Image 1 (cartoon, rainbow, N blue to C red):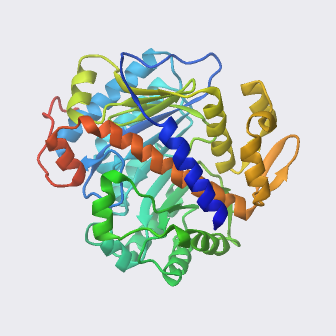
Image 2: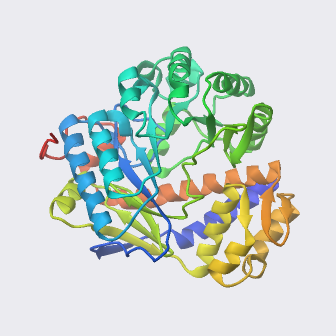
Image 3: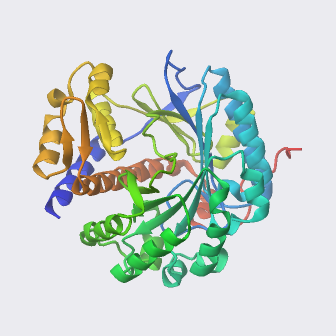
Amino acid sequence: MISERILTLTLRYLARQNLELVSSNRQVLPGPRQGGSYMLYAHVPFCEILCPFCSFNRFVFNESAGRAYFTNLRSEMRMVADLGYNFQAMYIGGGTPTIMIDELCETIDLGRRLFDLREVSCETNPNHMTAEIVDRLKGRVQRLSVGVQSFDDGLLAQMKRLQKFGNGTQVLKSIQKFANQFPTLNIDMIFNFPSQTQEILAQDIKTAIASNASQISYYPLMTAPSVAKTMSDTVGRVDYLREVDFYKTISDGFNHEFEPTSAWTFSRKHDGMIDEYIVDYEEYVGIGSGAFSYLDGGLYVNTFSLNDYKEIIESGRILVTSIRQFDKLQQMRYRFMMELFGLRLDKQKFRKDFGASIEHHLWAELAFMQFNGAFEVNDKKYITLTPKGRYLLVAMMREFFSQVDHIRDQGRRTLSEEEKDLFLGLDTAPVISPGPTWC
């Protein structure tokens, strides 16, 4: 698809200019704006096994290190509250947030005491879909997102997930058992694995529908330099030329029982939906090692080092280690992408927030999308997308997240050799002292 290739190359060129971080010793984040609406993101960087394609900040789990980390995460949450922030939504990602269910529940409960939270979203893995864990999360979590990736046993084996998380049939049964326990139960799937065929993808879609999940998110396989070798050695090299055909199979497969609620998320018709992406909340505060905050047009990055994070928080500080401030045009492009990812751009709100029309500032972006048949509606009030437009947003977001991985790679430059080994799964020894145990 020529338009996707042009889009990808353009985004990579812009990213090289826009996503270089500047070191900072800033003690605190900027405070909240009056009337501002924010989401809280909390990062839990521990996993029982490390998936070869994942480039998020994650380390091999160790219990003593995990308890110390959760204690410090709650301390950082209190510091954010002291800055004057309030949140209606909280998203807990990882890593595997449910890896210590008692610590996770205490963290959620603190969030509800400190902030006016209406909804909490949390990630988990299939082996944590147990009665014990689900019972603890019911009422605390409104959207549970299960990282399935595929129901195909061959792909699960390639991803090093088969032995730990169970085969496709076992995963399916565990999701079916608990699918009705949460207002929204989402399963995360990945498409465009090198060894994936159209037949495997079509069967995965049928199985995902049969899981009774209320929401299914289908991500394109993304690459990052930090995991390029492990990914190549396990799942192989990605062929982006197949991506558009796979996306069409996905869209067609969900056409009857589901409706698109973002460019790569499909929800059962008439079901409620809580989105994990920054659509309703453009600005967010991130807490935890390797977390990002996007505030007032600036990207603020926490340290990726567990050792440094422990030292900083226990000294009573919030220390942003890297900053990237975006100019007005860059902020407009980000808004353009994120709102269209959510399938509708509000032109009047855009004009109100930026003081000028989208046609004046982003005429080239609009012309490219219009020429390629991306817009279903483009009137005075809104822009909405055609199926082709949704795929272009998938490609745009895929490239955006790949470049965010470039930011993560910059953040990991300061890791000790021990921590780098833990990131790659080469060691299982704890890298931070146990610290206090939560009682």
